[in-house]
View 1 (cartoon, rainbow, N blue to C red):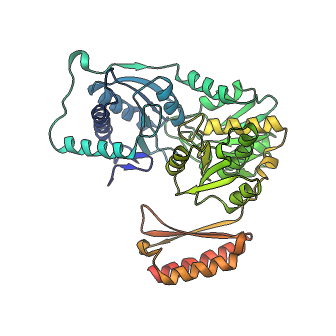
View 2: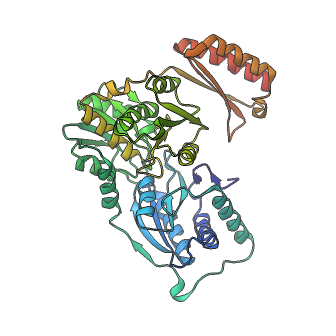
View 3: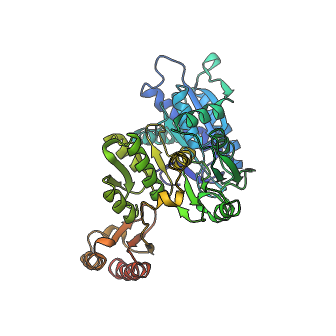
Length: 452
């Protein structure tokens, strides 16, 4: 697997890349590293462990729990819950560590391990590096020093997690959702019980699809990466709109009453205006990424709001928000972070707040999302090129300058090196889709000739 920790924990094919032995070893290493830095000082350590419904999560959960308990950590097993629920409970229960087993939107054969620090925040990069280093040291060298007798960790099921998390979500809402009919696509994932419960308690009439997880069907043709079923269901049931989550429910995409998609940028735009109206949009600023649609940026400028753009990845959005004290940020993909109420992207919370805005204003989601016009965006991946020269090639720099002159203020060019593959991503936005395709195609050809 190369370096174990990626941008979102450790992820790979379960029982091939991500084995029970690896899960156990990383959990023991995490306990030792957190003990070294003083996290457990003066008290008996406690960890919260949750998972999504993947079949492999059953044995991986057992391995993680065994590793933590063998290192002297008491474990609260919260079962199948969304990633943001595990993060919330880690903070709410005063735990020293949270562990989530999920591969998010990935197909069922994959799984992953994500660690949360005290308070439910993502573990710092340096701690992840140290955990990986300690794991390797003991995998190939000296055995662990293990507690015995009463020093071993105790394991308990914590069955109140779902109700506690749903109560938190309901407590955040500024108003009820009475009178709304909403279709929820749960991706046969971790929010299959949580999300319908929360929307129903908030007053909405709920229709669910993709809410029968069997361990094998997570993300299979449904959820935020496959909106076709949701679009059809919203139109069929004459619903006000629909909400789609991914496997671990840290994302939210939506579909308006006509069946049209409402992406993460549009959701951010709607929530930004709502939060400004309620006085909770700190510094009148939203955080997005360099892939945020130009239409989103233009809409925020028109509304008198600032947009800060980071590298692609919700971790970078979150870093910027925490560093500068911003309250709202997210990505086109539906990772939306409302930092006053969550430490990570929370798909159920996002959907609830979107619904609250519809109920509060009496306007349709289509009308609210119309605050921004989503400009056509074309993305071409150019493989087998020297991506290290993407910023130094004179030929490519000249071609980009020509493209930017042609597009003017109503278009945009972005060239990005892939972080994991030998390819360059060419992204072009324009007011006209044919112009975007034409410019992107020409730039892709230049990338091939200049960097090939």
